Image (cartoon, rainbow, N blue to C red; front, side, top):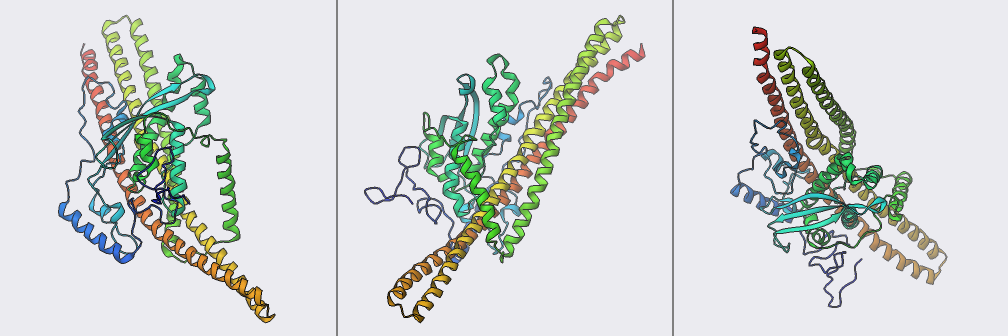
Length: 506
């Protein structure tokens, strides 16, 4: 629990050493009254949702195109190289107007999503660029430039640019997790720590930096997706720690608990083991059909996403191998053309070498599309499914806490009955006070369990809607890029055909 300021306002520090307008969420209410919050009163919620529904249908802004038009340069060998760097093709936090079937998805209570998760005209776009290696040897680290554009009034500027280390991203996630996970929020995870990949970066000389270029780029893109997915959540985007992360110029206080071998990481591992033991000793018999259905769904989704990710990773490697072999073929054909004495045949082989080189470049662009538009999206959602499982686990913990208090209350009542039979007056008075306290705690624990259950249902509906939007958008973009790449390959072979026909005529 946070202590009150001297004026009794209860406004606390953001955690980065600056005073914050919004208080922390260290209570069961999740976020204080100054932040956006889900109403837990069902009657008020239904009324608010119906009003928001009317507002949406009255205004009904035109949806933005899912696939932006891309001008194609005929002279470009690989029009899809670095296309994932285009901010218009990234999954940003800008409020989107999805299809009606997604926007109007109802929860199990028959209430359309609204209130906290209602679509607005506010936008918050974040790009992570310019990864720079600072220092030398094992003491070196990567710094990223984080640029934020927004029209939201509670940010100090419309455009903010700061530099952040990877450990800063991990520290931000830890702070959000500590404040919101206990209430049932689904917190987007950060990219995985990769000690081997980072060790190679640390030991790589400046002249050999191209060796680890793919690792750095994958992490940069993953960090950008992480921030945009986090600020897309209406409650998380108002968090003071997140605002400081995006606004505060200069270095943030360094977190010493983000390394893979830190004491905090070890304690997290121990706590996970302890939670598994608790689940075995006090297993929850689920009575809510919604949670039974969704638990089975996310377990199945987790398995299928992991299988699909393995296949897409293999596809990426296959496409890279195809690109490498096509370029090797181009090189061999070029050498053959140089030794061929027949000038016309030599010219045809030389042009064939050029076509193979250009086709190889297209294959390499396709491998990047496979990676950034498909495989990485699947990997992100494997992490998000894990975050959803974590929120479900918090509900189980709340239920276990409730049952433990109920068991203690039952034991105290039994002890009081024995004391009354033995006519121990002082003992009876003591037990009466303890019973009253446990009854109060039991009521609070039950209320906490009910609140977490309701919030998880809303969180899961938001997660499920965003999952549909993300996959639809990414797959459509992916298919268009694949179609254009095949058109590009066909065009290159079509341009080469006249040269072969001319040789045959001669």
